Image (cartoon, rainbow, N blue to C red; front, side):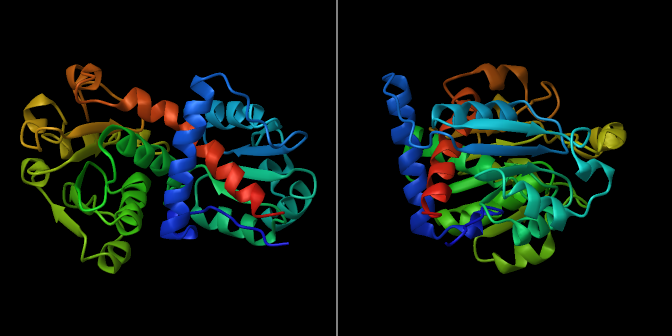
Length: 304
């Protein structure tokens, strides 16, 4: 039995990614029509959270229920992982009791080790290095609103963080060019940038980066675990707010995304976030549900 994991977008071929996005759109339509689609009765999703979450927990838990299964929420307080049990041991035990596992944690190396010893599919629901599930939702959202992102220009404004890294992978998978606007000292991983140098350009001026863009995206300036750096980061990222003035430099039909939660008045203006003629953040948030359902279906079907 082959076990497929989803730790980064690179775990999917280009065609598999396109198929999952297409299926996510289809599943969303079925949901809107109140057509039941529950192919996995009695299947159990194990949800391991070392970082807190709203969208990730609700979307995975609701998604597995809609697929006909159930979920178990596990925090460090609830498991031996929080008391120092080796990841390898936890992976081997938990994967014998559930059908699929999602993990939201800190070091990416942790999820790689867990997947190595798991007998069921493991999904990266966020690490410090990557957030591929969010990219599934973002790609789905662009496809729904504007069609294929192939050949488009996407601009990331902000920290070169886990979301930025996943956008670099998405640029290669979906064949778009990625502009990254970030202050010095906040660049994404240099090795990842170099590997994708043919489609990634680094800017220090957000205005230059956004010119001619079809899709603009940002994230909070201080991610989980960086709260003590908030004030320092606010100073470093001065001028990096995405607002109507900045979006005017993008293409006329450009759309704005944010993975949420948003800090209005910092990385994005409240006016832009609420302007549904440009901002698609609520569709983007909802699409976490549908994209992850399509992903779980894909991974579970590959176990058969």
